[in-house]
Length: 329
Length: 206
Image 1 (cartoon, rainbow over the protein chains, first blue to last red):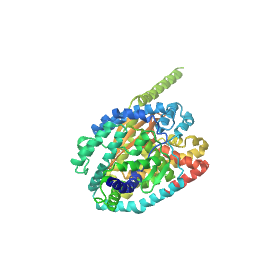
Image 2 (tube, rainbow over the protein chains, first blue to last red):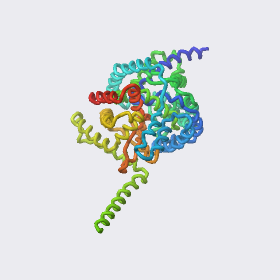
Image 3 (cartoon, rainbow over the protein chains, first blue to last red):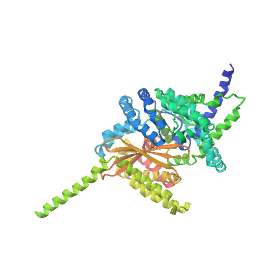
Image 4 (cartoon, chains in turn green, brown):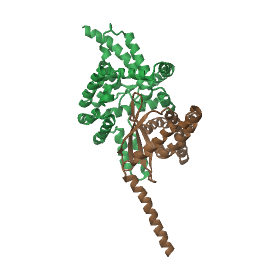
């Protein structure tokens, strides 16, 4: 009973915090990076991939950063091939398309027009809420320029970079359990194990995650995974595109993913008495500001480069999420 | 007669020279990566040039130098064609020409400023992956303060045996796909001319 009650309050908090965190993460540099999702065709073939995953990720964790990357990339071609074969039917994978097209292309430069059609089939997403989404896009845009950016700028003048990195590590460490569980759900056992080691090691040796000791000393890198990605791997499509206030670009599936990840977030389970709603709002605001302080300028240049920022953002979201679900990393 | 034979001989030698230029370029694995890395290293050199320290005045010099490197690094024709894809054929040759120029300026304006803010980032070139007979993906990672950003350059082997970049994929987001989505939206209900007009405004403003 008590627990239920607790949970309810937490859910609210969770949603609140998620939104905050995500906007930050999404808007600026990694606007293409953090949240969101994939194409509806997040195909079943993913299952095959998932099965191979445990074997693929092994090295990526333990080895030195460079090695880890090498091995993970090294394994990806195999993975792609898989996807490609199975995708012959469902035509979404951008890579697949690119590869197909390119395969045909090889020859004369003139023969291009034919192949480009294939290339054109990039991932896409339904956007029935476009009018609402466009409004939200502008709200987030203003929020960034009027609030987030000035605050983050002032903040970065006051707080030295080293401290900001420490904060960043600590916040990141709190998300480690969610990464671990999602890796587990995706059957990426090695990655899940690495995340577990990271969480324990960084929490203790890194004093609550203030330092990323696991990476610096052990060479165990973060194993990104989120619940939207997990859902995607099991064949669940985006549904449709949604621009969330504060969090930025997302989809039906990834919004569910946000809530799911929230349930895997340690602070969700601290009682209201110990951590008031206001306090957790402050924490999330701080996380967002701290995060943004490293990314000032990223959103600006994204917007500068875009001819239609709304469409550019939507496309980047879909491409990025697709990649996250397809990749074995 | 003798002259003719000489000419044939010369032609033969010429052909062999051309061929030998060709073969190593395509056969030597890593050529694509080395090419891209070479260009990126040059850009970094410009960014870190201590002689160009005084910020504002040096900014233009740096930009010009980076622009010169990008001309060699990218194949803007290929990039434009692949961006417009099917729509490419809707453009007249003159419009295609103008599009290439405008698109190039758009990209240069947009990314030169961005690149100028980089300096202490470390860049590692990881490996290359063959995409097709003539195209390769060169994979690199940029290390920033708190994150690592994967940046992949897709390069194509040109007729002259040089590798040139036709797409950049950052964190899974392909540059040309992203612009394709934007241009497609405009071209879906408007003629090529209005896309050009939009680009003219955008570039003029920058």
